[in-house]
Amino acid sequence: MTAPAPPIGILVELTHRCPLGCPHCSNPVTLERPGVELDTGTWKRVFAEAAALGALHVHLSGGEPTARRDIAELTRHAASSGLYTNLITSGVGVSRKVWNEIVEAGLDHAQLSFQGADEATNDRLGHYDGAWEKKRAFAAMVTSAGLPLTINAVVSRPNLHQVGAFIELALELGARRLEIAHAQYYGWALMNRAALMPPRDETEAAIRLVEEARKSLAGRLVIDMVVPDYYARYPKPCAGGWGRLAINVSPSGKALPCHAAETIKGLEFWNVRDHSLAEIWRDSPAFNAFRGTDWMREPCRSCERKEIDWGGCRCQALALAGDAAATDPACSKSPLHARIEAMASAEAEAGSDAIRWRSYREATVEA
Ligand code: SF4
Ligand code: FES
Image 1 (tube, rainbow, N blue to C red):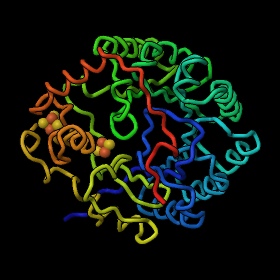
Image 2 (cartoon, rainbow, N blue to C red; image 1 turned 90 degrees about the vertical axis):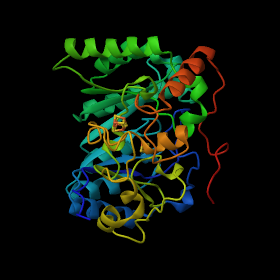
Image 3 (cartoon, helix red, strand yellow; image 1 turned 45 degrees about the horizontal axis):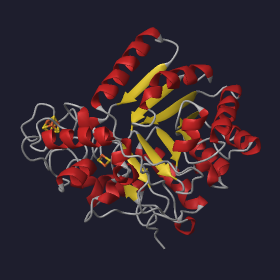
């Protein structure tokens, strides 16, 4: 097998600790305890290896990455390794002192999540009273430090009507970029799908609104959008294609091709404690399982889009079709597509309000 091109970046889940309890959280349902987190020295080695491998940027993520006491030290090492550093944060619990240390350490960019575009929605969906004011204060610290700010809004039925308000909020806070990402249904969001699935007409209206705003705000605000693929014609190229662009590393050091890869039982994930990032990228069974197109069956195998969307999402194929190697049922060519679309519409219409908030207490937690 020819060696794969280097990854563009790595996303490091420094910890699964987080003050928020979002029902759409992209962390696995089995959260990792603080006791299993990699130590400072190992993370530093991972950053140096990522840079040597050719990665350009590192996303310092979690959970809440600033829950790590060594966040400034890690940022400094990642930056001095030559990586562009992006902090992905809830903005809750970041003191001015810690923020100043992170900036001084060489942070390049901050990405701040909002769960709603007003106080009540934000604090309810984040499951944290007072988060709204803390997030706004954090945004002000980012812009006053002169760093570029991205606002990240995960949208689903409870807040989809706020897409316009999210755009206003991003402008008001001085963000340069707004990422509106529909909840992706694996892990926590899959458990909460009946409460999160939006109706098709509201989804399409939100997409139109974003398209218009992109034109009217060109040059002022970049708006990226991830659409809910249950209603799409073709799936998204999940993670940019399995093992093509990025490496995720879990708090305990498991190297994953995407954040939900552990839902696929039977894959062998190598750990950065035991292998270099270069070995993992080139040789690990998990990264090679669905890399490229050789693993595909029909209809993907002969499809003209197979090197555009790379067969969609393996984790979604497992969740919906029971087979990670199946065509993603989000694709209109999948034999399951019509059934999945009908199920999404039925769930959106039924409109459940029962939400299971992300928490250590409710999750199955590794020792
Ligand atoms: Fe993508 Fe496969 Fe659907 Fe073609 S058949 S559009 S490759 S998911
Ligand atoms: Fe795993 Fe899409 S989340 S491939």
